[in-house]
Length: 267
Ligand code: NI
Image (cartoon, rainbow, N blue to C red; front, top):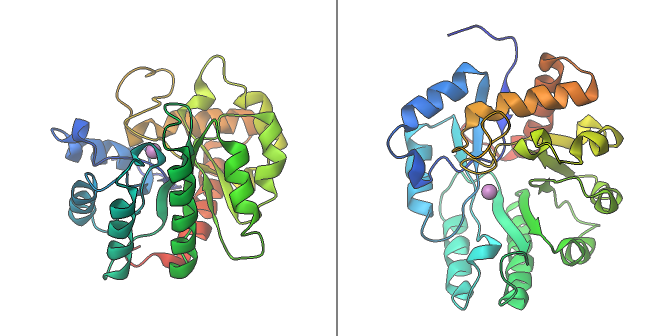
């Protein structure tokens, strides 16, 4: 393996997804080969926890789990899903964040109210356990913002995962000094506004992610995404900020560790 002078962190990757069942060891090897030193894995719901924890167990010190209920998994059973999240947090665990949580009104608005309740409840859990949150937000920024505003005077920290470049939201996002913007393969897409928008955001406020197996960057767009594709996100970000690959790795890794660092037990 080629020696590298830097390390990258994939702050958002679902390597426990069943599409990785056949070749996970190779996926991890390829991630290591491009310099990824650590990955953080957001949970989806009760159906994914076991698979996630077993991958984290297999790759201790490399893969770290989060716990949380994804907004698109919020339905009439959300109370029992939330109590499971609370149970896992109360047990001995190595969760590094509450995620992914938030509001998604793009796919379905049926459970909007329940999504809002679940979001608030998980923010409260984050404060109770002193963990950062990883926010998934689609077509619901104002609702998320209104909730976060209530916690402005607290220590709440986290990531606005999968920032897509909406100019009108940037100032509001940056108001939360303990939050970072997660940049993924979208930055490489032809029609993305991110290349124009990112220079107005200090690189000290961004972290890198893949959201594997989704959002594969160019030149692998449309294919299964994996953590090794983080190099394309890194390269594009370097290009946009006129920085070297090393500088982008150094700064974004520092950002990610400052957020997850205090809570890590296995790093
Ligand atoms: Ni995700």
